[in-house]
Length: 392
Ligand SMILES: *Cc1c(COP(=O)(O)O)cnc(C)c1O
Image (cartoon, rainbow, N blue to C red):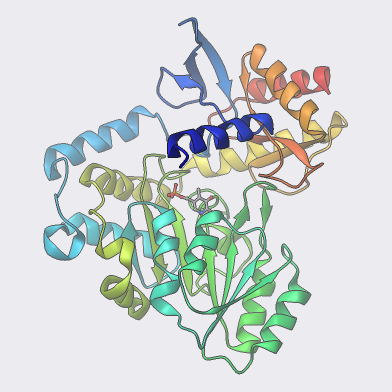
């Protein structure tokens, strides 16, 4: 009999042989516009950070640390319980109501992560009489969540509305049809066609679920997400999202929806029922972040201005990007080896970006995914454009 550990070692070797083995850079600073990393020789170096989901720049900010300290002082470190036993504080309900209102829904349920929100959604609502109609580029957590439910799964090509309509027509006899999409497709920075999706859902009496992880807080005029951007705010049946990106970057997620769906999730959603209550410091901080955004934070306009600026400058420089409006700006390099080499060169210049290759993106579609933040200056963005020009 073979030794299981040696089997795992063989698998690791195979991953390395394919050139897709991931290593992690060690960061010795807080998150921010600039970060310090520590190399193997223990040398610290400073980098301009263009690969965080820190769209509003709140991650690593003193303001959020202060909010969190208040949360710790007033509500403690943790609750040692799931929500339905003794893990629901007043602030948990307050955040649920605030986040629901922010994204245009009646109620919301908190989770430890958006991965869990998606993991606990489909199985709770759907059974084998139902159909899930899902965009092919949807996030891994949606794919896994759908796998857990007994509904039939139908897939359409990314943002292909004709195919979506055909799938709605062919599933007309099913009990519930749920259209499922990322609000923003994270490898392309492309926004889902929610106005058309909502129109089709109304026509065919289907429900719509949007995972707005890469949008809540900064997409749309007042940062309420892709529904606001697409002029269908308040018309999405289920919105899932994360507190781990624009809203601060610690952790936590939510499912916002009709109050009866929220109630059902509280009865039956397994990651909600069987996992610990979200830490009070995070809950309190998120209440404060939403209050900030409700007042109309200038950070929302700033990340949108910065994204537009970078997209214009890259295009002027003749650099190939995936067109769009989002703060995720994919610089297309196509060749896998070249993409990794360019990312490495930028790193040597003190600019931290990441190259994405197969299997994360299709073969021959390698890219450097740049992520813009409200806290980047135009000089920062100019520096990136100049460096890319030099190495492309
Ligand atoms: C980041 C992301 C998630 C995971 O969110 P966590 O709160 O970190 O678990 C889920 N869905 C999408 C679309 C994401 O981009």
